[in-house]
Length: 172
Image 1 (tube, rainbow, N blue to C red):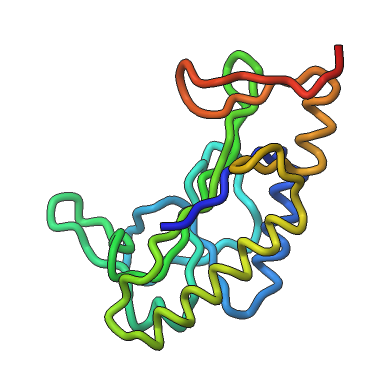
Image 2 (image 1 turned 180 degrees about the vertical axis):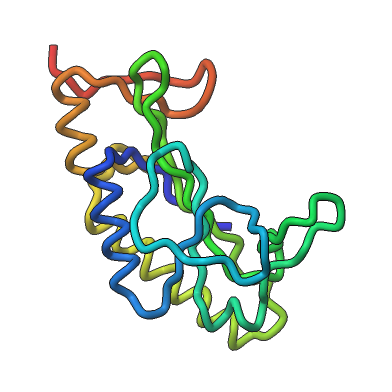
């Protein structure tokens, strides 16, 4: 398992989405469940109403495709034995706080060792871009430039749902 927790405004997300979209080894899908086994990839970042996005390596998705859930009839990439990345987007809560987002992947569960190597290197490139483009707040949290500017002007960061830690980067 590997994840990067972050705070991003829509401007920061746009930059991340454009990085992903520019790569020829990435497809991004809205949500986690799909009506068919070959969902249509996103060409623009959707409004934050769609908080969950799925990032896949198209070549590995051909080998490890989405599976249909017998109860719902929808397709999804299984948590294990599949090569996908969950992108949970940061969202502004009703109280005005910016709740953290993350990228998350289960690495090392593919059936072929060579596929695991491709998946690991592919995901590592995504993580490298995030860590190069965002600033580290502490050991496990990162923040985009626009989100940092927003928080320094008084915006409050929510480090998780419910009664989680809240913090502003504003001085004073």
